[in-house]
Image 1 (cartoon, rainbow, N blue to C red):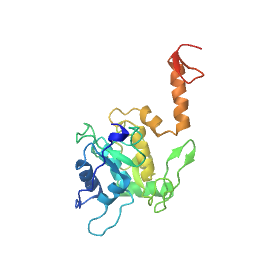
Image 2: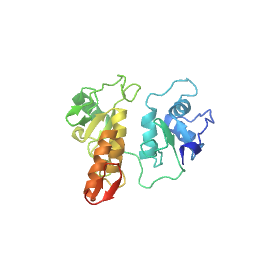
Image 3: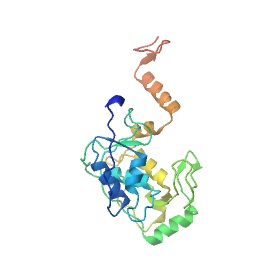
Image 4: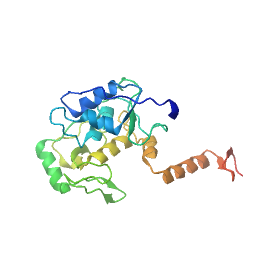
Length: 229
C-alpha cells in the first residue's frame, strides 16, 4: 500500500457492545484493510450511554492482538502508516492467542503493596514508578495498574496465582511494551519488535552492525557494497 493509495476507514457506529475491547473490535471488523486513526478508535470505544471516553483504550487494542490473535498494524510495522494510525488487514486470528492466568485478589494486593501502588517496569535500572491514577506523560490518560507475569506467559503459562513473587504491577503502556518485546507463540525474545520500538539513532546503530556482521561496507556516497572499502 503506497501513501497515495492509503484508504481510510469510517466510523459506522454507534457501537453498543458492552466492553471497550468489543467496540474497538467491531470498528476494525467494519474497516478491514483500511486505516483507522486514534480519534476514530476513541470515538468507537466511548461508552454509548454515558459518553465517557476510555483512558485505557490502547491496552484494549493491545489485547485484540495478544489475547484475541488479530493482526493490527501500526507505523512500527508499515512505513506508510503515520503515528497513531492502525490497520487490520483481515479478520484471521493467530492460533495460540488466549486468556492469561490472573493472580488471586490477595496476591494482587500483596503485589501492589510491594510496588507502592506504582508501575514496577525496570529498564536499565530505571523504574517507571507511575502511580495508579496519575497522568501518563508519554502514553496519555490516567494510569491503571494491572498484573503481569514476570516471565512471559508462553514460557510460564502456569504461573502460581497465589505467589506474589511471580507477578509485578505494570501500567498500561509498559504492559503493551512487554507484550511487544516477547513473541507469545514461541516464548522467545521478539528482536524485530524491539528494533521497531527503538528510537531512530538506535535503529541506525543496529543497521550498521548488521551491515558489518554480513560483510557489507557503506561507501562515502551512501551506497552499500559487499566487502571492505
